[in-house]
Image 1: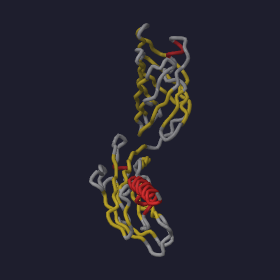
Image 2: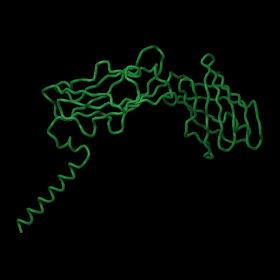
Image 3: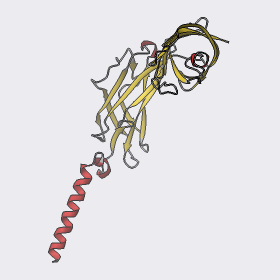
Image 4: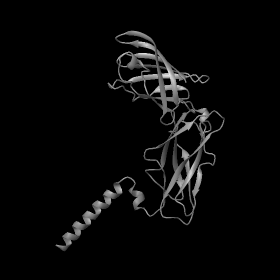
Length: 270
């Protein structure tokens, strides 16, 4: 009987141990060896950089963690730019301090600086840097040795304020209309994003006698686009596109909804 109980206990321990080691990341938890990993490897990281057109780059950094007790000796490592990278090293980004670093004794992380050349990137570019740990005096995590960093650029934007808008367009029932006027307020709501107090620019209130639908627009380097989530009170999606006159500050927006309303609205700063 005792022999059977010992055998059963041994089987249970074996199953538990196997389950633990099959779990992603458990190699770090059960290893006595110091192990390196990129912070953010699970979902990747994203940088939103303001394009200033001043000839200078923007400095950012990756973080490498050491999973271990504090060490009495430095831990060195080298990384490389992965072939999945779509940004071009030397044109869109650089590593000014190289690709070999050491985590100092008594520390558990280090920041690896890199430069993004925002002047060389267009607002509609969707670039990424992919880096991989390739050698180290410590172990390298098999799960978190690679990091994908997305790069996006925006321009300085300061559109918040009140505007006098004049709109002309068409409605499905009444045909063409013109000279619909309303005061429009833009309220900043994040980088390059603004809330609109009326994305019909007076059409709903003055033609239909209905409530004003609110929405949002984005300013990406003087190109206006509507938030994909824009919908009126009837769940009707709005499409919005436009531009900004950098000299006068006048904003022109062309918009439509799936009901059939269309408009071109010219917003002049008050």
